[in-house]
Image 1 (tube, protein in one colour):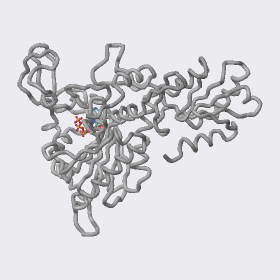
Image 2 (image 1 turned 30 degrees about the horizontal axis):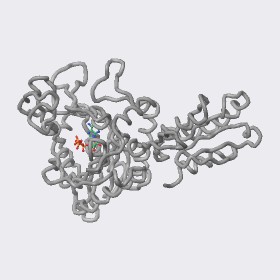
Image 3 (image 1 turned 135 degrees about the vertical axis):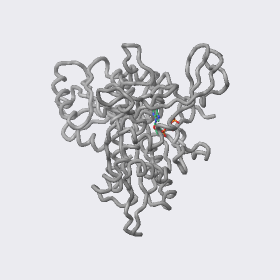
Image 4 (image 1 turned 180 degrees about the vertical axis):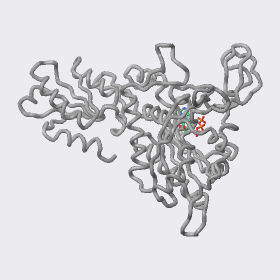
Amino acid sequence: MQEQKTNMDTIVSLCKRRGFIFQGSEIYGGIGGFWDYGPLGVELKNNIKRAWWRAVVQERDDVVGLDAAIIMNPTTWKASGHVDTFADPMVDCKSCKRRFRADQLEGDRCPECGGELTEARMFNLMFKTFVGPVEDDASVAYLRPETAQGIFVNFENVVTTTRKKLPFGIAQIGKAFRNEITPGNFIFRDREFEQMEIEYFVRPGTDEELHRHWVDERLGWYRRHGLSDSNIRVRRLEPEEQAHYAKDTFEIEYLFPMGWSELEGIANRTDYDLGRHAEFSGQPLKYFDDETNEHITPYVIEPSAGVDRSVLAFLFDAYAEEEVRGEKRTVLRLHRALAPIKVAVLPLSRNEALTPTAREVWAKLRKHFMTQYDDAQSIGRRYRRQDEIGTPYCVTVDFDTLEDKAVTVRDRDSMEQERAPIEGLAEMLRNRIEGDG
Ligand code: ATP
């Protein structure tokens, strides 16, 4: 079996040490399955979401965006099937009282203490809450376990306001919540996480072809943004693995340390969801096909990706340790579009003569990019610090700068340095950061 060369502890410790990701409510001992994104993590995560939005909404003419509420009318979850079937089989250990997902256990004893396990019972993963001041059955609501249903219930609104013709899609990024029995593997399985989902509505009969289109599109997106071919693959689910609504599903999987695991699911959900919402709401939820003069219920192709799992995969793929002139260098080779900090401004030393110019250069650049200013310790140490967080370019202000009005630009990957005039520096860096590839 292939193995991921970097282990989980290395990434977890980098994330904590450099401010990417912290344990949620850490000062109170944490809370299982919840994580906080720090100053660098929020940049990386926002950049991933932006890159996705750009590829699936901005650069296409057949997909529009949406931002629906997290809490929905609870009938939504009856119609979608979540109230009845969104459950995992759970077992308890009779000795140590730990709980496990029965379908993830290998033997029939407790993996922690070897104790006897209870019979499996179904455990619904939706978080419940109450809407309004009265806590009774009539006011029960759920935190959404997926963003998809917010899209389906707005199908009619979007069709009438945008006049989109089939095939077209609706894209949404947002939080989802699942009371997972066993969260774990850092941010891979959380109880609060973010999804990036598209519901792509198609004419029945064209669904299989457009399904393949989306698998290729999404795979291409991960590759373009840095995931290497050997760490990513597509797997078609077996008939017995399909969800109750799905005709066919492909998973894009990444080679994490715990093995190949799902990054994104791309399902053909047929007309299941629109049909069910039509039935439960009494609204027709049909599309008028002016080619055939028929009212039809479109089929749906759903590429459903996890933001947090993407963050983790991009970190794993970018992480490298190498030796440079006898010293260890840790570098995150993040794609430039994803790197949290694009440019670091480093005065050669804290010498008073350099500071005003260095600050001036910084003031110019920070209007264009996320930047950092660092004047602590040797220049070599500062380059290493930026390498470790994936900053593509370092700009150094030295004594020559005061004479020639130029700076040294260092490239993270090649470590090559070149002289560039301050005049036009922002444009030069922008071309490189936003350029193709
Ligand atoms: P799994 O089999 O891993 O529980 P799933 O098949 O239930 O996942 P989907 O319902 O298809 O997942 O959700 C779509 C995407 O949302 C997943 O591919 C994943 O990226 C993300 N996702 C789902 N559950 C979680 C979670 N608990 N934590 C983080 N991301 C998640």
